[in-house]
Length: 502
Image (cartoon, rainbow, N blue to C red; front, side, top):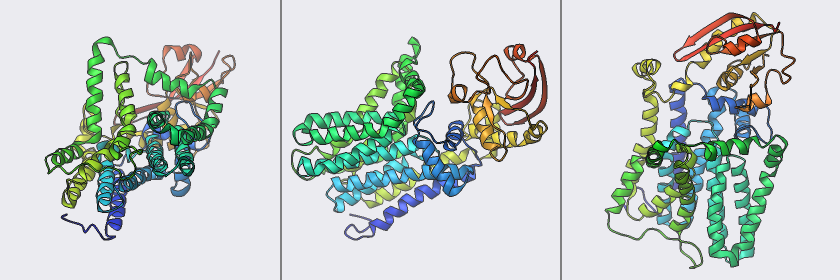
C-alpha cells in the first residue's frame, strides 16, 4: 500500500493530527470571518445562563455544553462555540474507532478508521456546522457513541456480558435525546437489532431503552409541567407544517439534493473512484454469523432517519441538517467500502480537499465585494451574512439605553431579544419579549414577557424594534418617541420610548 506504513504506530499521531487540523482550521476560519453569533446560538447562550431541564424549542444539552464552554473560555463568540466545535472531531474519533474495530483492528482497520473520520470531517455539513454552537454537535457525538457501544454489545459472546455495553448505549441514547429529539430515530436500528438478535440481546436492548428513558425523564417532567412546549414545537415544524400541493415534488427534490450536498463532492468522487478499482470485497466484521455485517450495521443507523425525512419532505420542507446523524452511518459505510480499494495517497489528497473546501466556501464571505453584494441583494455568497451587524448596531445603542436607566426594555422579535441580551451582557438591563397577543411564538413570549397581566403593563418602557411602532402598539401606548437608531448592513434597530397607557 502506498504512502504511510501500515504496520507501525505512525498512524496514531497522524490521525490525531487530522482531528486537530480540522478543529484548528475551523477556529481560524471562524476568527477570520469576523462574524458574530447566529440567532439560535445567541438564544442557546442565553439559556446557558439559566440551566433548566428543558426549553421552549429544544432539550437542555446544548445549553449545558455552552455553559461549560463559556466557563472555560469566556463569553466571546469563540468561547461560546469552542466545545461544540470540539464535539465534531470527537465524533469522528468515535466513528474511526468503530470502523477500526469492525475491520479487525489491523492495517485494514487503520485504513477504514482514517477514511471514516476524514469523510465525516470533510463533509460540507460538518464543515459549516463544525463552526457553530448548535444542537447537532452533542447529537452527533451521542449518536456516534450509541453506535459504538451498541456494536460492542453485539460483539460480546453472550447476552449477560453485553449488558454493560447496552447500558452505556442507553446512556448515549438518553443524552442524545436531551440534545435533540432526532435521536429517537436511532431507536429504529435497535428495533431491527431486536428482531435479529432477540434471543441473545433482547434483555440488553430492553435495558438500554429503560436507561434512555430514565435519562430523558427530567426533560419529560419539565415539559409536562410547562404544557409540553418542546414536543409541541417539534411536532409543529416536522408534522403539522405543510408544503403547498404544487411544491411537493420540488420539496422532495430539494431534500434529495440536500442529502447529496451533505455528503459532498469529495466523498462521492472517492466512492466513485473506489468502485472502479479492482474488486476486493468491502470490509466485513470478523466473527460469528449471528453478528450483523459491518456495512449492514452502518446502514441501520442511517437509512431509517433518511427515509423518515424523505417521507416528511412530501408534507413539509425538510431542513438539510435534520438528517445530520445519518452522515455517521453513511461515512462508516463508505469507509468500509473504500478502505480495501484506495491507498493512503488517495486518502491524503481527498482529506486535504475535503477539509479545505468548506473553509474556502466560508471565507468567500470575508471578501469585501461579496459582503457589499450581501448588503444589497438577497442572493449572495456570504455564509456569515446573518451573523454580521448585530454587535456594532447594539453597541451604538448603548448610549441611548443609558439615557433611561430605570425603564424596562422589551423587543418585538426573538432575534432582537437574544442578540441584545448577548451584546449587552455587561449591562444590568434585562431585555424582555413584548407579550404575545395570542399563542406564544417562541420561548421568550411564553416564559419571559415584559408583563404577564394584561391589566398591569408598565407606564413607560423602552422598545427595541426594526421599524416604527405598529398601529396595534400605538393603541396600547399612545405616546412614542425615538431615542436611538443604528444600522450596519442589513441590521437596523430602533430604540423607542413608550409612554402610557392613558
